[in-house]
Structures are given as structure tokens and as C-alpha cells.
Length: 300
Image (tube, rainbow, N blue to C red; front, side):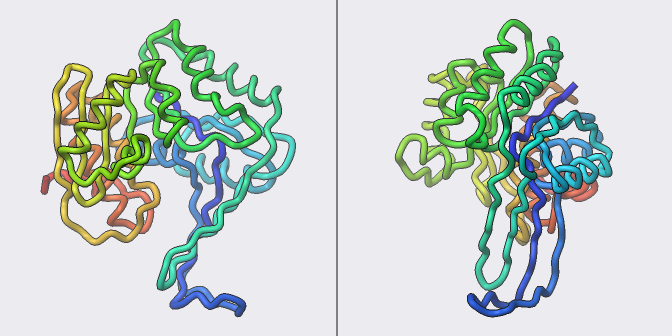
């Protein structure tokens, strides 16, 4: 089974305006509500591709209830920890002449609730896949992902980590099956600007030297690069299209990669499906459906 962890899920309230005028009353032209969080996005795209998963994490208050019901309505199994204090985040995404975001903080998670998540994760067995995605709330220990991987080190659970900077670097010693920085995040880790695929390969190899088994680097319109644990390097060109939404594109790539790898156990197949899924979501208002993904895959 595939499990995804979203420590700080949110209701994403997306509004479109002709122009945002500060200090004045603004009227929306369009609006939409999404059940957000990187792990939830991965589970949703997996479901679109016909792959089952279980979404784990923390929810709280009336917004948490809405997130849980909404994720269930997508056909995704959930096993969230219900937090007593506070409420799950509401993130406001403003799309006008420029894009702006106002993201909430999320609930206060105590030690008993953290242990409850660990109890759920302790049921994972050999052959399961675990996706740790996104940031860790300030009320949880900053080494939470490391603690989880350490707990699971006695069994063959394939762990995929999609996080940034120190959060990503600190898990490398636990040899995650896959990490997925984008080229900007990869550059931030090493204090450089990654301009092309050749440079991405150089710095992705450094991540492997630090412990990552497979490294997938997304490069927006330039496609993606994959370095495998066998030493192979694969590249995928991004299909052409109009970018409508960047939210969830990276998560869709992770989901597509997982779906492709589990189907064929072939890294090149996984990379192609991951690139198609990520691009399809970038070309859609929300996460792409399977028809959109496979149409793009035929063009690659």
C-alpha cells in the first residue's frame, strides 16, 4: 500500500480578480476551493491514475472536517489524527495581475497527537511506500521525518521525500528511495543557480553521495532529470502547453513517478509518466485527470 503524510493540510481558497487594489473592496471574478497539502495532492493524483493510497496527517476544527470529507469525496482513504486545539489552515491564493498568497499557520499539535501518527505509521510493512511531503509545523519537532524513517528502518518501506533545504538534507543519511527537489530548491541547497540539465545532474549526484538512492529533479518547462541508484541518468522533455497553475504540479510528478514505477518497475517509464502528470496539472486549473495525463504522455 502507498501512504502519504501531510502534516499541515489546508483548504486552498483560490480567487481570481481583474486587479487587486490594496485598501479597497475587491470583487472576485472566479473562485474555487481545493483540499490542499502536498501529500494530499499526491494521493489525489494517484487516485486519478487508478492507484490506491491512504492519506495520513493532522486535521483540526471545522476546516479539518471539511478537508477530511473533501478528500474522502475524491475516493481517497484517510486515517488522519484529529487535533484538539485550533483548526486546519485556510490558504488564500490571489490571482490578479500578479499572484499573491496568504497562508494560515495551522493547529497546535501536542506530543500525544504526534505519537498517534507514529502508531499509525508503525503498521507499515515490507513493500509499502511512504511519501513524506511538505513542511513540518512549528509545533512538531523539526526532525519529524528523520524520526519516522528511523522508526521504519527495520523494514523495507520505500520512503519518498519531497521537502526543501535542511528538511531534505537531514533525511539523506536514512537513504530515502527517492527525493524530488526542483532545480531552484536544488540550487538553494548548494548556494548556486542551476541553469540547465547538465548542472542539475552534477548537484543531484552530490545528493546521492550524501545518501539519496534516486534523485528526481523537476525543471519546469525544461522537463526533468532522474539519477538512479544504478548510476543511470535519464532526461525527459516537458511537453508544450500553457501553464495555468503551478500548485500541485510537483506533487503530480511524484504521483506519476510512483504509478509508473509500480506498474513497470522501470525508471524511464516512471520518469515519463511523472513528467506527463506534472505537466498536465500545470496546464490545468487543478490536478489533471488521467485522460489529460495520458494525452500528454502520447506526445512525449
